[in-house]
Image: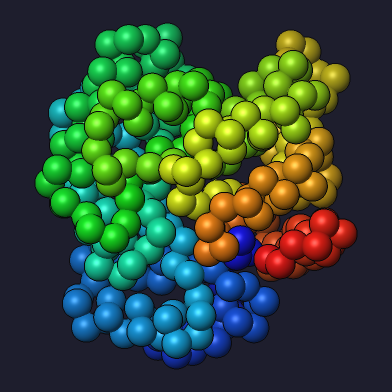
Length: 277
């Protein structure tokens, strides 16, 4: 696997970007260009990544393709298509979004989100995005969420079968499906289940952690890797069984120091397990 995260060092061209990634100690990076970048810029960043042995992990298409408002929905689907096209052009491992929500908040929750009607909407929207772009070397993926499909390994497998497109794959963030005390305390088994069922489809992963508090009713908070309950030894061992280029991308931290501390923790666990990150 390859550890990566946001870059805080300034850069102004592809070579200085690649140097900044290396200076952070990363072997994977978020996509450095946005949808709409010209072909020459995309090719230049792809070349610098290749020469520096950096894997471009993912292009985020964060938006709500299930929005009830037609204008918002169309704009989101357009963003997903453009992001998938950039991912394919630059050779990123995947383009990632959530499925979307039927509520006002683009990432939910809403009573209609975990229904068969919404499941079928997701199938049709994902097919529309993939069929419009026809990617040949990247994949469109959905990040699992607590209250949106896919919300479990089984619902992800069901989506893969229903969508029926080679270019649909898996982005894994196990913290996002630790939605109960049972899953929280049994997260090692859930991680193994994710890899057993989805491993062949996993293109990129996120690294964060979670804490269950005593606040009622059930309340969990994201925290820096190493400060929560996620079994990183199991997570890294399972990741190490996959393609050696699968990225593990840190996210949702507050600044450079927090990312450095998170990276240090992940590397320390990897070292104990004899795993290269």
